[in-house]
Amino acid sequence: MAAKCFLIFFAALSCVLGCSGGDDDHASNVAGMGGASGATAASGAGNFANAGTSGGAPAGGAGAGSTDDDALVVPRDVVVLPLAGGTGDLGFVALTLRDGPLGLEAYAALKNEGDMAACSGGLTLQLFDKNQQTLGANIGGLLSQHLYRFTDGTGTVAACVGPGDVSMAAIFFGPEVARDDVGFVEYSSTYFALDVTPIDGFTVTGLESVTLAGGTSFTGTFSNGFDMTVNTPSVVVFPVSRVGRPLAMATASDTASVPSGGSWSFQTNSVDVVGNDGVAYPTAVLPN
Image (cartoon, rainbow, N blue to C red; front, top):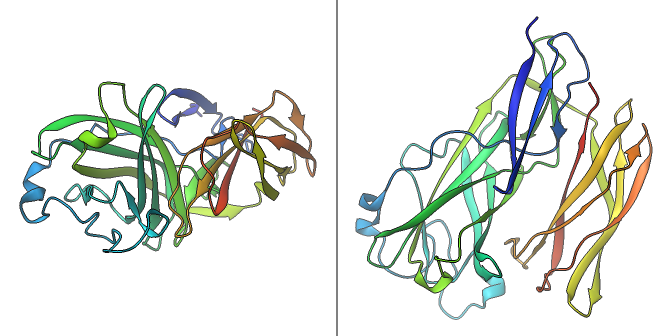
């Protein structure tokens, strides 16, 4: 049977092409990452007619008198809107825009409000200024804490956002876009609604924040629940606000192999924010 290939994106900066033999129970891929697919969202300026010019996202921006820690959208005057017909069952939860060393950084959270798993998902953000003129668009992979196996007999493993689960993504823009220039954000998502069943995969336990001179780092333990050795483990951690809004992204990775039932202790790079909590997304490469 011909091999099946899946293009998997990580934070819109790099990608891994994983291929699995159709009859192989152990798909070779980066398990735990979402994939990004589909075209960049077209202009949706027509959606802005009744959105106003302030007040945050129609889906639940912060009200007057609340702090940024309570806000679901920061900056609080940015309006977030879905691309008409372009989000499926993935609903908006929260968004942070911040100026980073290489340009604008966006950290988003979406929730699967449907009754089927959303697999290999991608998120597109298109930015507009306060005059509804486009500033640019980019795409990132939706991360998942859970893994699933196809029920078609191929044994293929996929990272999916299950019903009720929250997925997060980091999307980066160039230095020509500044946070204060953004007035509107339009989002769309792509994913595969597949017939899959949940499996034991990777878990992160003992996640703790560590205060460093340059910011905040995270430590914890990655565990391998597969019945096989996995390679190149990594963990993405989003520090989050009190209402679960992702604030930044920290990462840790290793070239080591982790045997079945084994673990890897990690410490991420530091980020210059302090959240109320952290949300971790583990990944690793499965063997052929």
